[in-house]
Image (cartoon, rainbow, N blue to C red; front, side, top):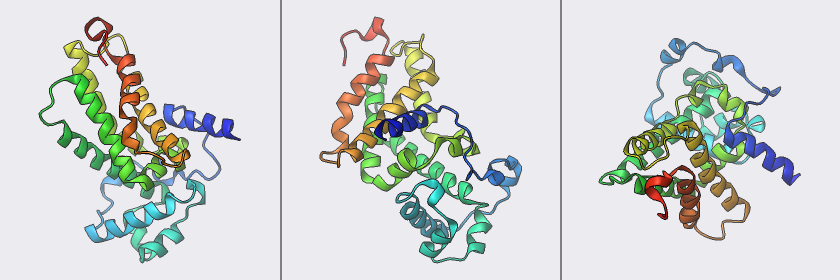
Length: 238
């Protein structure tokens, strides 16, 4: 059972395409982007109430077990109110996943201010992610444990991930400066970085959170830097 779980999570983190399961809801994912643009934006109050409900529901059960009825009940609003802003369960969840990654990206940018060295930027990038998911464990559970990659990849939000955007910025800047190995594809570097940080979170949860998640910074950073650092300019630097 554990081997099957690890295999499924490996597919999840590395972005392998899986067959769409029977519960997959394609009604939103196949909408044209122009249709998405005309969906009204929820007020701050409705957004916050829905966010709390989404976090509570999706962090406790797997994606296919979560239902809009329970979300509406916990948010204290009607189905019609939710469907005014979100077309279905997929649209609701991945809209908030994108929102959380936007918050994380903003936090990363704040912490990167004044840092010029690419190596230190990567270290800070990893630390902020670990700190964010330690402080927001329920969100981490939703993104890295509960959400099936097949449903996420089918949603337009998967291609517009604010976290990946800032990771790519740092990696490309490092390659231009010669501190990141230019022979390694940036997409592979991104997969490595996201995989190591997310696996650190999963392992932290699995082992009962006996220590701070941010204490995994140096081991995670060492793995990433040995893999992506330019050996001609960073030899011996950890």
